[in-house]
Image 1 (cartoon, rainbow, N blue to C red):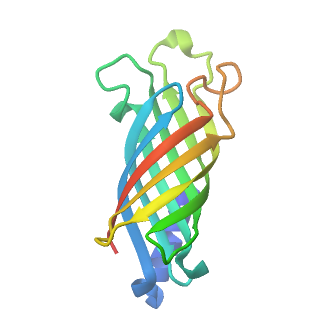
Image 2 (cartoon, rainbow, N blue to C red):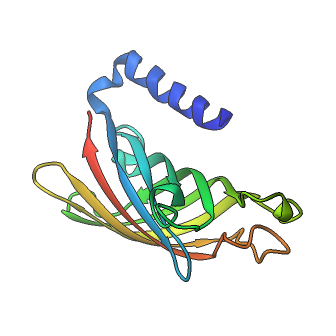
Length: 176
């Protein structure tokens, strides 16, 4: 998480140097579904600045887990995704905006039994995501995306519960 801390510190430094009126911070909720496996839910935030590519480039961070989805009240594997991404938004003057993002992060699965210690349960994430965001007049934003994990596993080479194709639904509310 050192790189995430570093990027947050850069954003805080920018806001302390007179860019405060131009910095945008949105927080929200994410629901992520791997095709063929688990529903994961969690928290997300993204940051942008008017002076960086005309507010088209956003830095995001998030945490989603099956602990808040498929693993609630079931024996589903508890898995956690710590995510960082850069997203580029097209048509910034429109309510409906296409976007593309490149993400990275860390994935871990808790198999809970020592019998499964030989299986891979951690992986670095690398993913591509594209979708649409709708900006409501109230400044609330929702976006839908379809993504692909380039580092998906098959159980023998990488975690077996890290599936390649996923969909995301995000709800953002502006803090600033």
